[in-house]
Image 1 (cartoon, helix red, strand yellow):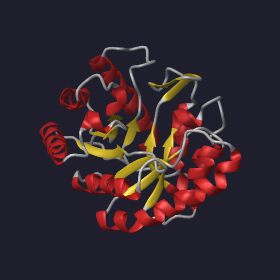
Image 2 (cartoon, rainbow, N blue to C red; image 1 turned 90 degrees about the horizontal axis):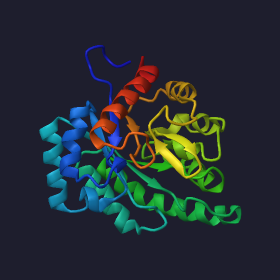
Image 3 (cartoon, helix red, strand yellow; image 1 turned 30 degrees about the horizontal axis):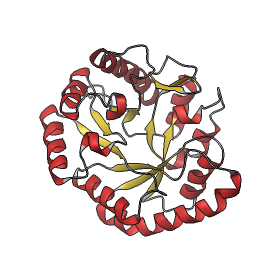
Image 4 (cartoon, rainbow, N blue to C red; image 1 turned 30 degrees about the vertical axis):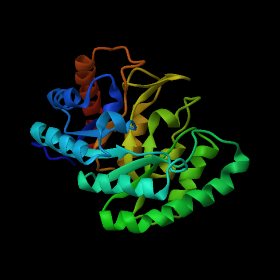
Length: 266
């Protein structure tokens, strides 16, 4: 349980609005009340791959009293092990505990599952010593329900739990839904990170919790059963949300995040 005098650890991804420069995002995130932020999948926006970019991020976070909880790295089958290792090293330099990646395409035919799983396992085996030395966890994220999510589940289940975990994306899990929350149950012992957002319908997603059809009582119950203790990350965006103003959006996102945190941690 979070201490009564301590803030709940609630985070938001910089993908909430890439039109807002990172230098403006970070102070606004802090002002809205978040304790953490996460670097979205656009490395140009955050600049974390470069030494100068990392120094800038460290200065921004320090000035605002924030911590970075995850970095969204490149897709495993599109990046070389060398490229992924560079992301891990940057993650460690920024003192970020978790890097999140997709294990493969968002969707693919069932016939491709076997060879894609073998390829992903080889990549992860090569990354294992690099992760261990860096002190960074790698979390594989669910994508479209079906073979593409089976890929990351099966990979995580056979990888070292000290180095590899699962990132649960609620909006991806509920594509075509409402669906059951069997995936959250399946991965609860390996849950390393979350990316929480609501879904309205196909192609209208990553909206604020409460704007779509996801049953957040069941999500929070699943996170409690998993004894999840890391920051609750909202991977939400202004794109389809009712609130378009970035400042008001952040304040509303923090309010919704706190509501979820109370349900999970109290």
